[in-house]
Length: 351
Image (tube, rainbow, N blue to C red; front, side, top):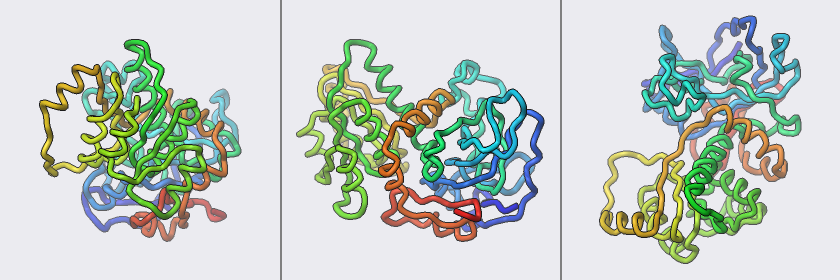
């Protein structure tokens, strides 16, 4: 069968490779791969900046934003042939640490976790893949064309859960949220904010292309002015930061409402230096009981939350996030960056 593989650490090694079909254990699902979402992590791996092959192998099957259809399922698994599913990316470390031992493997404390398509486990970028039922989540059949949005939605579900848990330290009824960045994570964060009945604002630097229209169609407000100006005017109760741009991060931190929560989901590039008023930031955080928290990855609970979020969303709006689809044999085109919101690689011949 065909699979999208890369040699981690070596730029330019991405290729479609013939690999053996998966050997499916008696307690595993055999899944026909339908599509694969592409994100910044995939691009880092292709550039040779990140990623680890499975032990004893040189190449890694790429892909963690999965969508597939069950071909065979073991009796009693809760799954049946024809079910639409997504695979969970992370697996707990074998030790395990306390967090992994309690099912919170997204919060692994010793770094020995593994991840499909990223760290020591082959991903979902193949025509067939296998997965344990405990690490698969069934999707609403209506999501057959856009279910690869599941994994980025889990990231958003966890981020909002973190906001809720921090807010619960005292009375907390947020009204206004600012989302910085109108990529898939930002737009999905805005979706969840709208589902919660909040006054949602989205900030991005572009003025053309699909992003402003997607925000407006959601019922949120789009901004493209400097982050410092927008945040100062809005004074949001919650910020979901999805750009990873250092200046944006510090600008929004300085302008939340009292008892504000800033949740960072964007990963910044190391090495860039910014002049920062550290004393002023410290004063603001302490005197206003503000919180800045980082959030990454997701556990099984967040996958189930994400399945519910997508099932309740407008399917046409979700479809608008996917701005380009390419077949597996042209997968290299999906890695190229342009003005796309989300690029998808189709794995089945009818995709």
